[in-house]
Length: 107
Image: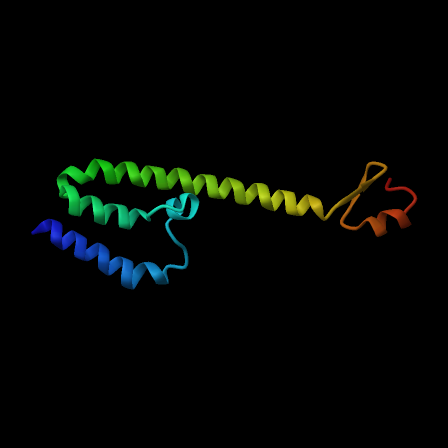
């Protein structure tokens, strides 16, 4: 009884709440595999809630790690994009090489 109720609650979440959050499961986004809610739903259906608790907890930990990896990659990309827009000539840095070539000395 409780298992069916929990599965129905997950289905409700997937159908009516999740699509309107503005973001998706980090684990799904990072790995391309099922979302955490889908994992929980299937695990509860196959094993029952009590047996599924540990597996679901591990899945949420994987999602947390995936989120951190996505954020790390995003920061690295942002840093790369920002440094690609700068020009360094004779130790001087500018957002544009045209500006630096027109200036004889930065000091």
